[in-house]
Length: 148
Image (tube, rainbow, N blue to C red; front, side):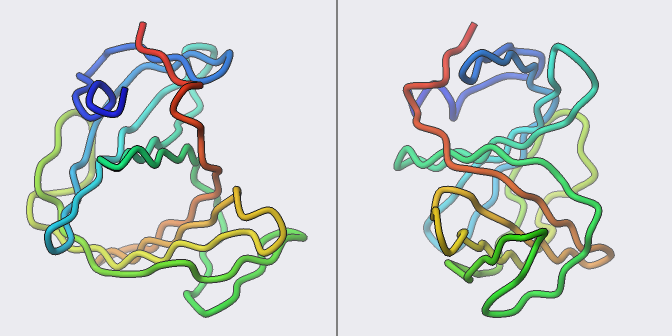
């Protein structure tokens, strides 16, 4: 299933649990010898935008943007939850398709945090050259995703 998720196309439809989404865009990030792909998804039941991160090893996360702009640190607080820094790095845009505001070879510093209690919820901060984007999400078991 990971291979199929790494080959989604624009306007393709996927189902995660009982919700259905349409692929609007994809950005392939590289960092050293590793890579992951981030799909921009639009809910078929509204205009909500979500992001699906897929790694070749099968790790998948679904998240959505939040309005708050937090500054990266070892621990951050969002709402009533506390998150601890899990990983950070600097990646570059290798390739993209669809409706996206990135350009090829653009760099981003990312900070991924895990909920200190559940460790299934995550909070991500991306620092681009002109903006900071924050999102909240969770890891998704790959068997909960189907391509329609």
